[in-house]
Amino acid sequence: MVFLTAFQMAWRSILAHKLRSSLTMLGIIIGVMAVIVMVALSQGARARVTERIASMGSNLLVIMPGYSTGPVRGATVTTRLTHDDAQAIARLPMVKYVAPEVSTEATVAYGNQTWTATVSGTTPSLQAIRDWPLEVGEFFTEADVTNMSMVAVIGRTVADNLFPPGTNPVGSRIQIKGLSFTVIGVLTSKGASMGGMDQDNYIYVPLTTAQQRLVGTKYVRLINVQAEEAEALPALQEAITILLRQRHHLAPNVPDDFTIRNMAAVLSAIEDTTRIMTFLLGGIAAVSLVVGGIGIMNIMLVSVTERTREIGIRMAVGATPSDILIQFLVEAFVLSISGGIIGVGIGWGTTHLLSYLSGWNMVLVPWVIALAMGFAAAVGIFFGYYPAKRAASANPIEALRFE
Image (tube, helix red, strand yellow):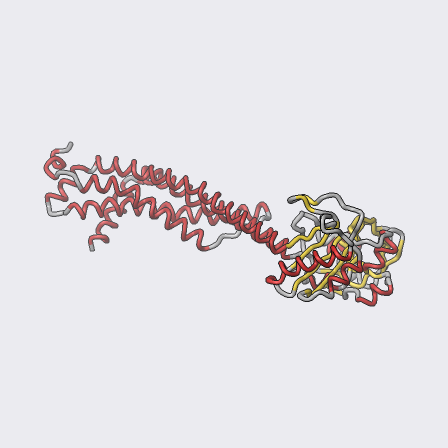
């Protein structure tokens, strides 16, 4: 009953000074809104990067020619990766799929229409590694790789820019570097890769066809290796290192002439970084809540001074110091929590508006709202306690004499 009465008195006091109460709540409103928007932005960035890495495949190792010096890959050395290396890796235990790649930029033509795309020679396992379904048609087979078939699977961007809208490209013949290829499939759209490259602006052809007809090399640009399970990646990486060093006849004192990237480790590092950024941005935004709390304390001190005679009258008719303490503490809490609710609403709207205008998928998670509201309530209680304590310790006689 005491708390209900305190809430009623708090609302009457807030409504009696609407402008002052609104300005007092402003710091809390801005703080809560900033926390929600900043964390949503960080979570959206994390989800986007995770999605792009996942589009490359799960449980994935990527092997590239050259050695690594820190985060930057070193210059490519004489020994390079080959299709035979990929086949040897495929025979290792713990390996699920292996897909070597060789690529080149090329101008592609269909009728009078031309387009520039990346042509990648690979094997059918690439589709399984990337879990990439086809919109229409089918992917080429191992028989196509063996026979150097002149077939191609195209991405959505290539299809949109070469063929008229509504056209099914399957069965059409396109020209790549003057050679005729039959389109046998169109991949579903995947969007940009982690590096910002358009994954849909690719044409996939059999590896041997690309090596012999388009690029003129026996080497491959990289080898994708998918492990049976994520826990096997460290052991598999070590096994591949030993295998390739043996195949490339490297002496013990000679560094690796290849680099192995563990995409699960890359993803983990990125997630750790974005998690730190989330707390950092949230902490910076939380400063506004502290500033708002100081504003509440200032206004409550003013309110205690203005209502000194009221406090004296309440004490004279039987109110205890704890009743006065609860009254002003509840008033500070109501101010803070009201500002928090308004801040959540504005933060929610701002998040969706920015997401719509920028095309950036900002993720609004429930725990952020709960955290912001909890922090706002804590700020109100913390900064409201001193003014409430000061009101509760007032001398009734002196309070009644106050003018």
